[in-house]
Image (cartoon, rainbow, N blue to C red; front, side, top):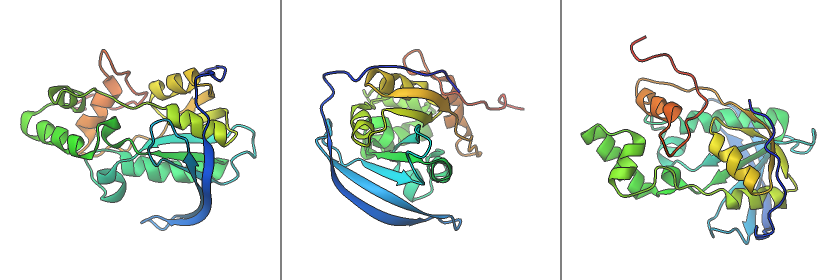
Length: 223
């Protein structure tokens, strides 16, 4: 957990408005079910079709629990064991539904580099032994290309400028703070480790000189 990241709404943040709201029942493979209110938007800065899923009663406590979840087709849909995205999505939906808040499903495949580039990076990791950040660099791509301006727009439109952030990534809290969203605390997610994703998780935990390490704790290699 972290202390609050206070900020004022920056004047350059363009306004967004609600396009559609619709109730959708969610049913996960392990049997967990919950209703979500899905919201779409006009005027998002990057022009992408991001979604906000309202879960539970978002404003019951005055400080909704929010997860910024970057789309991961391989993990979210196909259950890839190369990452922890699918289990994090499942965990987040239940935890947010219990407390009340929003899951922002952001179309930022591969930390913003796109699906094809992500699979190219996978090939370099598999064949060349590179980690996830080095593979992006070898392709001439940024380690993390995600920008959370649209996420901040969505939260302001949902009247949620003050949140608890469900994330292990300090960069998300920092960006939101600079975009006028006050993060009262950062709530860590679980660590969903497996033999297939352990190297990936260690890389995320350590970070690089450019990309901040995530606040996750793993057993030392070989333990």
